[in-house]
Image 1 (cartoon, chains in turn yellow, brown):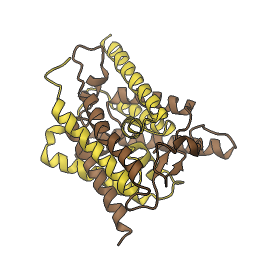
Image 2: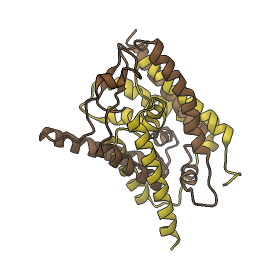
Image 3: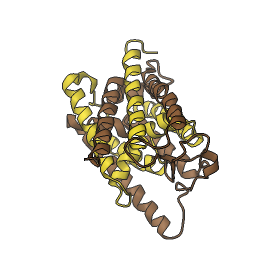
Image 4: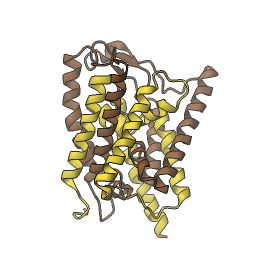
Length: 143
Length: 176
């Protein structure tokens, strides 16, 4: 384990804020705080009620901007991965989250919190393939 | 004026969400990859605490909401998915998402929250993710139009959710 990189309190606090946000969205708007569903639904021509989705996405941008102003060190986005790898990753995430009806927030936080069998299965699956992918890419990149 | 309130609450929720993502370390793909790198020597469990912290807060409050409330405060009804059976698209989609996550270290939330940085990585990822989402939705619309089913839009059964969802829940076909 990397003790230097481990940020237990910040991560717990960040998680608590995410939990709070999900609770607010549910209690006030009656909606699940699943980002892939919110953003994907906002993009999808067929879905009803898109304005609350864009409002949420706007909030993501606003929160990101606030965090950037207050604590820019929280964003470390530079990577040694080639642009084509990032682009491929993006397409897979976009496709996979819509096909699977959720992501780390929709399934991992909200679904698991409801003890949804589908979400638990989805969460275990993407954690597993995520870990496998990292393991394989470390092998591939080092040979 | 009352039509603005759900938009304001949604915007506020999004803002808090992004702050949580940044504070939690999700806007650092290297940290995400270090969490997924379970066999590596430098394993970073921080992400488990992000997800864990979120569930610790949300799960009990969800139960409270389900028991005490028949409708959300600013909307006519809850829009929650039911206890539908596991389907191939669910598992396949989750598997594909995991691969993309392990390749880039980004998932949808942190990618969008990082857009204000105008970093090439964040913008590339969001553009590609947008394309991937539209691609899936376009294909699935075509599949359904031809009488097929992706299986992802299974109508949940009412009785199965009665004990977990608030009474006025509109049972949605998709998760989120």
